[in-house]
Image (cartoon, rainbow, N blue to C red):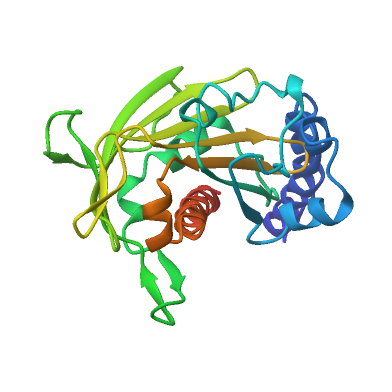
Length: 267
């Protein structure tokens, strides 16, 4: 009986202390409204939904989810630098479930490259759920085609890291990318750039360095923010054969689900 009473006391203390500790952790964090002050309530509701929100635009069309100028999120040095003809933007906030996600959690989630393999998207042409990436591997270096295993979860967050990956795309075959992770004052940035031409049948869909994407991840008071934008510079001829906005959006959604699932598995 004494043991049961002591156990109940510990549980009670845990219930009382946990919310206070989370409040202390989130006290120095920014809020969603700090970064996206101009969004209306319906847009915010979509961002906080299970899948988040995503949209595609053509060149010179207005973007919807642009962060505040002083947010520290650099789009023009990454996605916009290649003057893309098509853009996709997405916004997702993952609520905390007993734990405040950290930058280290995000870094470890991004490290699980092999988990991209087999992730499904809905193919309208096939009217079925299809695995977007049939293979997903980390490469030894830029010039080597040798695959290396994903690392064990890190205990410390590095300031920056570059990793080369190969994704066997269901539509475009083997695609090679450079990923650059860097820590920012509030979160971390993950950039993705194609290092070789992306082809479809006998045609070059995107030339080297013509696909650029940024994933920005930051722990907020409201939950873990994943803001992303991707741009592709494709010719009118290629765009007449392939729905480029749809292709970008589907791949962006797969990357978002990959990060979200890996973050949730860390709790």
